Image (cartoon, rainbow, N blue to C red):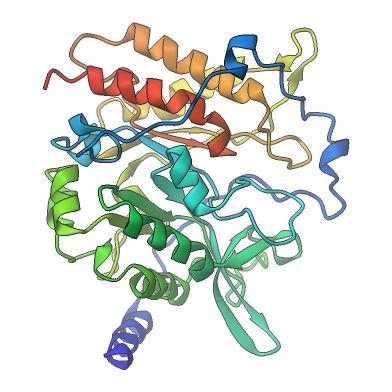
Length: 373
């Protein structure tokens, strides 16, 4: 049976046409001699208020709940608030820069239910190594963390122990270093796409929802409720590559998420306020994320709140969490009685995502209370 599946995958790879593919660039990997402790644009954490030192941020799932909450059970996936980890599974291996610092299960324990995972393929002594969790598109600056399968298996074990949880796996950034473009940068080849699909199938089996799987039509139509997915044990919704997919085996990120935008400039320190300069961030979010997604029919509308310094370092001080909380509070106060509290956003993607877990319960509570049923 395994050989048959491999044959099907290879047939699709041979027949695939990659001419329509495009890809996007994210945070640049740091310079080869980058030292985080010497990065002038990394502010230290603010001192936590005394009350926060004694605050228990442990969230106990409600009995019979779906993704922790009873009132999520009858909600469609587009009506649920999803907390996401940017460049997840980048917590192991030698690296000058990371976006996440804990494992998949630890992110799940912190409340993360959407995993953005970068994957690569490369040649080592004539052997193809693929897929691996990585970050980068120029080989000499790319950070390689761990085999993709090694990062996914603990997530599968966690899901086995938590049967009322649904997650997204998004393999958006794909870099095949065996097929560089004219600039020498890696490209997202059909072969790498299908290697990712094969690993996901191998690890999660019938839990997966890929193209044409049971429950795929309901997910695509936006009618699948969380409890429907839980009862069917189809609890891992997978996207591969960035663009809308023409492939028969999978959907792309753009088929599910509005939209593929992030803050592309480095974030600078506002020395007069001992904070970061947030004004250009708010303007960018408004014009490239909030307004374009205000009337989107896609199930997920993404607020990507992840930043880097001029040297390529990940910014994850408490200033980021404070700014995100302030921004979401502002959205909540501005929404009408018949809209979600953070409209249009229902997917929040961050770096060091476990660090902001103390906010998640209140954001979920606000989101749930926006529904009258």
